[in-house]
Image (cartoon, rainbow, N blue to C red; front, side, top):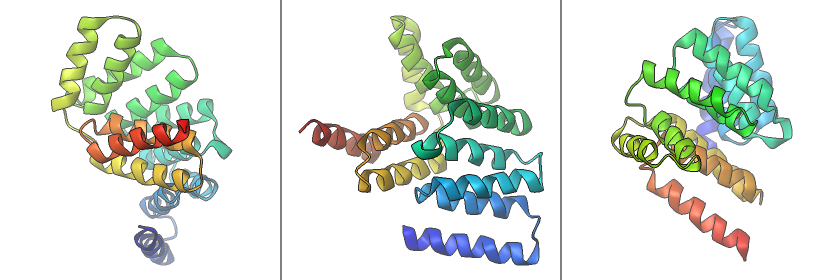
Amino acid sequence: LMVVLDRSFRDYGLALVNHALHPAAWSGRARCRRIAGRGKEALAIALRAVSVNPEWADGFREVGLARLCDPEIGDLEAAAEAFRRAAQLGRDASSEVLLAFALLRSGHGEEAKAALNRALEVEPEHAGAHWLMSEIHRKLGETALHEGHFQAARVGRPDVALAVGLFNTAKQFERRNNAAQAIRLYAMATTFHPRFALAWAESGALRIRSMQ
């Protein structure tokens, strides 16, 4: 994995040699560093992407992901603002779900539900939006609503690319013995891809090892 990420990072760099203001190359390099678990570098590069193009939704999403995935630079309010901007610019359901994650972790449940409703307006079959909504209703004891969203998540459309990226980032934190962050990232991966069996298995195994 690391070899592939390093090669991709280099290729994006070569693109920038020819076009230094190419925002997709900057956000691609940020994504490589974020998946590798190098959050500080990812954040710096993602901020460069949005400075090159302040209308670049993917750049703002990477800013938010860097802050959400790496506890050393974690800032839930800043992450939420970046996801909010990404969603506004891109009309992107996954960015709304990421916004909901950040809002839920900072105690803003109603705002999180509003973000998930917007995600489902954009993409009614988005598995991640349904999964996270089902969890909200489960915790509130709203059984019928929980079950409806749960079933919709099982047959919905996963964001495979985002889920796999989060899974690989989780593996980096697991290797650093940061079980809490790895478990959190595995949970995010399974939200965006509820049928991601390997992520569920890795999360369960890590929870058991953490208890021993």
